[in-house]
Image: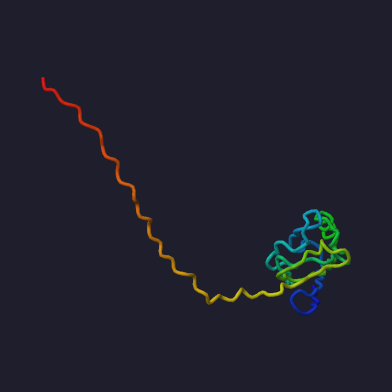
Length: 152
């Protein structure tokens, strides 16, 4: 098993796993899900885990076949058909990713312009002094007279 890295976050890296299945990960996404292929779950201590794959890593290619146009089942079949060696080209999870499915010739992995939260404002909200509106309505006079009582 080998991991060849491209450098920093968002760069492609290659994972080579040998020995056949199980490879130790599940697959998510695909063209039919309108989502890039990515690593789902990773089995602790499995081949994928030992190679540094983590859930959310994007799969750029499977044994040299671009994943851009692969449906989920096609990608799964490519992986299952690997009896001795599986080579994945991947990229790590990056914020602000533009889906590779929206580009015609290549994957585009973009980082967000700013990953910092907005600076707090120093302007304080105006204090509110809520007072109930005065009532001008007087209670209506009662016109009900008790009925006379007769004793028997």
